[in-house]
Image 1 (tube, helix red, strand yellow):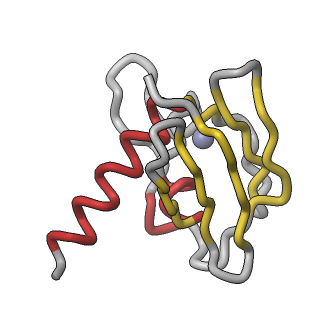
Image 2 (cartoon, protein in one colour; image 1 turned 60 degrees about the vertical axis):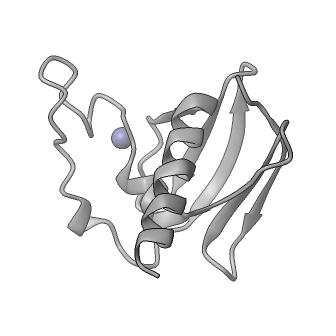
Length: 107
Ligand SMILES: [Zn+2]
């Protein structure tokens, strides 16, 4: 499994940059990250349905704090006050892959 070698928060660009152990670089917009939260408040843990309405996440959402949890995940404190989500490396990698597929699909 890929793990991050370097993680940078680019506030002026509104994105998180991850350099992976295979030297791939992922750039994940803050809003996409916040919309993709998988905590029990955002996703129904029994049905897997998304409880969070992604449209309600502000365009200007920012992480107030980003911290490592164990050595397997990132935890964000978002500017809307939400802080219960854990983003595992696997989840971040999946998000990065689907985001780059989406960007390529739009060309
Ligand atoms: Zn959440």
